[in-house]
Length: 454
Image (cartoon, rainbow, N blue to C red; front, side):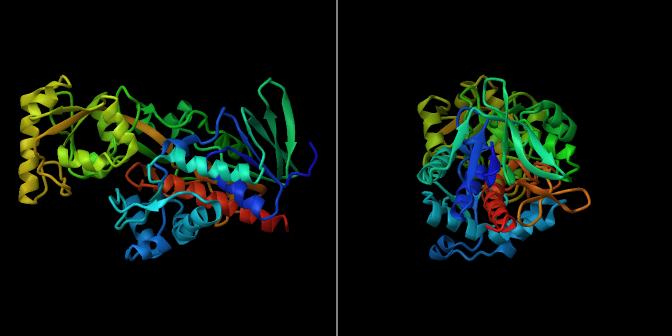
C-alpha cells in the first residue's frame, strides 16, 4: 500500500473510533483496524459513562464542578501516580470531550444524577440512558459509517513498521495468515491494555492475577510489547480496574448501586469480610482473597433504584437474584448459613442506625439499615481493565524513556498510561477508562493533524 493514508488506527474501541472521527473531521485520510470480529472492545462492556467536570449539562442541572475539583478527587483516591500531568490534562479537557461527543458526534448521553459512584465528589458521569456501553459504541460506529471511514474487522496488526526511528505503518494479518504492509504517516495505538495477557498481568499486577478476566477479548498487550521494542516509557503499570461483583453464573456485572446504596457482601460462611465502600474496583482484591465467590445482600428500596439500569433489570429477569422475606431465606436460597447472614447484617444495621463506623471501618451506609424484603446474588471478583501503559504527552504522543516523542506514534485508552494511580485498584474512579479512551483518542487525532501539517 502506498503512503497516501495519513493515519492508521489500531483498535476499534471508543479510543480508536473517536480518533478516527476527529482525524476525518480535520481532513485526514484514516482507516481503522480491529482484530476481533466486531468493534467495541472494553468500551462496549462498560456502562458507557464518561466523566466531565464543568460540562454545560452539569450547569443546566445546577451542579457546580470544575477541573480543579475533579483533579483533587482523582489525586485523593490515587494516593500516588506516575502521571500527574496526564491526570491534570484529562480533567481539563473532560468537559469539552463530552460536549464534543454529544454535539459533534451525536452520542445519546445524559448527565447521571441518580448516583455518583466511587471517586467522584459530585455528579459528573455522562452516559447513555440505558447505562450500556454498547449503545455508546453504536453511536460512535454510526458516526464512523456516516463519514465513510474504513473499518476493517478481523485484521490483526502484528508489528509496527519503523524506518529511521519513525513509525510509518504496520504489518497486518488480514485473516489468511499472510502479512500485508499498511503504510501511514501516523499510527494511533488504540488496542487496549494487557488484561488478557496472563504473563503480563502476573508480572505487573500479581495481586489480581488469580481473578477471572472479564474484559474484552483481544486485550493482549501488543502496545506494551511494541513500545518496549521502541524504548518507550511506561507508567502506572501496577494499576488496574477490578470489579468486585460479577453475577455468577450469568456473567453480567451486578450493579454496584446495590452495594453503594447500602448493600453488603458476605462470604461462604455468611459473614462480612471488609469495607465494601472501598468501591467496586478497590474491593475486588479483598473479595479474591477470601474465596472464589461472595454473595451480595440488599433490600427492596435498593432493588428499585438499581432496576433503572437495563443490565440489572435483565439480571433480575434472567433469575440472577433470589428474593425473600427474611435474610435467612435469601441466604439459604444461595446455600449459605442463614443464621450467620442474619447476625452479620444485624451488626451492620446497628452501626448504620448509630451512624458510626462498623467493625470493618465502613462509614458510608447509603440507605441502610437494610429492611425486608431482601435480595441476594452470587458473585465473582474480576479483572476488567489494566490501567497502566505507554507514557504520552499532553497530546497523546508516545514518549521514550528520555522524554522525547517517538515520531509518528500516538496512543490512547488502555494502550496509554491511565489516571488511576500508580498501583492497585483503589485509584480507579468510575469512568477513568472511557475518559482516557475518548479524550486521548481525540487529542491524538488533533496532534496528528498538526504534526502532519494538514
